Image 1: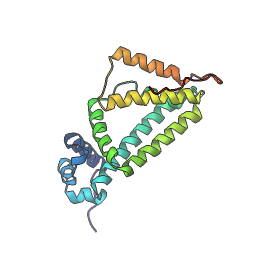
Image 2: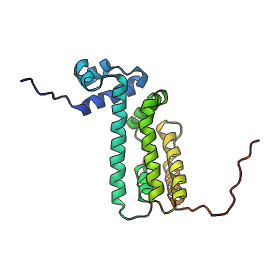
Image 3: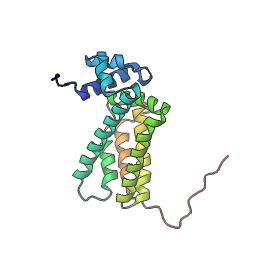
Image 4: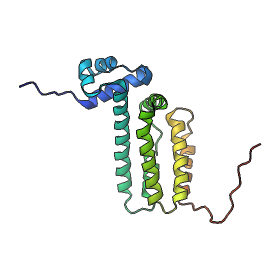
Length: 195
């Protein structure tokens, strides 16, 4: 009877994230991940046959962790109106830490180049948008708030812009206000004019 395999999957994924930050997703190799994790390349290949499979596992773990965190925050709000959207807002209360930002920047590069990797994120986005519109007192206001929040997050995660803390808190309060805004029925919205 052979020895039981005791390689920790979290350690492999942690090593993969480290290599993604250090070398970029495009330059991630199974050899580099194995070296960082202190295991053989064969051990990495046993669970993740390809570089793409390993990157996908890193992304899926990030998504699962984000979902669990959001669910915890949403559950903590109880019967509050528009709890899903407000949970998303709470999850974004602080700017992303540098290590999270670095992983996000490099994984975005991988997502941009691989439709299969993007498909999981696209499905997750569709699920979140459906949950927001189904559970909000003002589905349109909540959707607009979500778009505003995602814009803020993208600018921060990609390190394109950051706001002073006081201004960021104000933006989040205004996004919170937007959640319950109900566009006036029958009121004609201005057309977008090309110049």
